[in-house]
Length: 281
Image 1: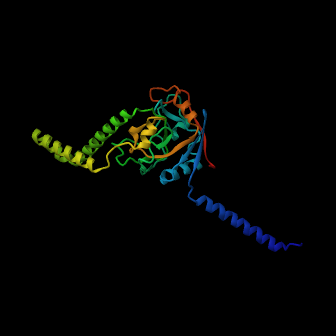
Image 2: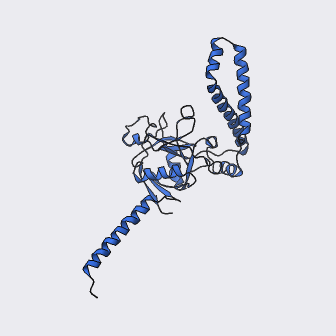
Image 3: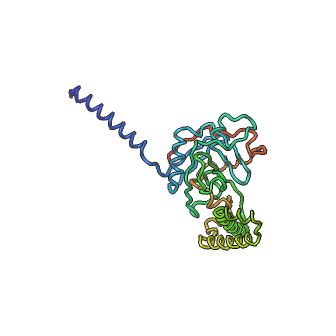
């Protein structure tokens, strides 16, 4: 059958436009149920990203696509705790150089999905600055850590929950005190010890009241089961965003956590991320 040349050219152009549009739609589509393969000098790790933390998921996907993590180091490794990476300055770091400050120049608002997602062994979470500089607990734009942790007896978990409750009250007290700073400074200038003591007691009472109004710090049965069997880092729960978990390669993570480190917890011999890529589930 003879094909009309003009119709054939039109068909080719039409198909080409359709292909471009399909690529455009795919690129703009929000990915869900995403796995990322982390190729390292000690082996491969696959992590699953949680859809319930969309800002962290989408940011991680963006950085993976941009090859942001390629050739970066696991710059902070603490046995029985975690391994941390994502510092862009680590690509060209010299031996012994202190790392941990490199980032893309932005932060991500915290996305706590707690207690559903917690710091069990294999959890993928976002690093961040401490509470003093970062009271909103916003995450680093790129730095992440994977929990190795340790196993806890159930009685120790109960004691830890009690300590975390006390820390919560302490944090509320500090916030209340900061809001009354001018008043406190005036009392100090006047050497009014009685006034300071009365204000302190008032703030302690308010802190306890506010803490009591919040959900009590306890561990769910799922957390207890995980922390007493595979282990983790329960003291970080509710304070850092957990946005994924390891689905393959925990043996590689265990190799990494056992490497020799210097006084700044940086591996003496570099452990490098060769590449990251999105993989099919």
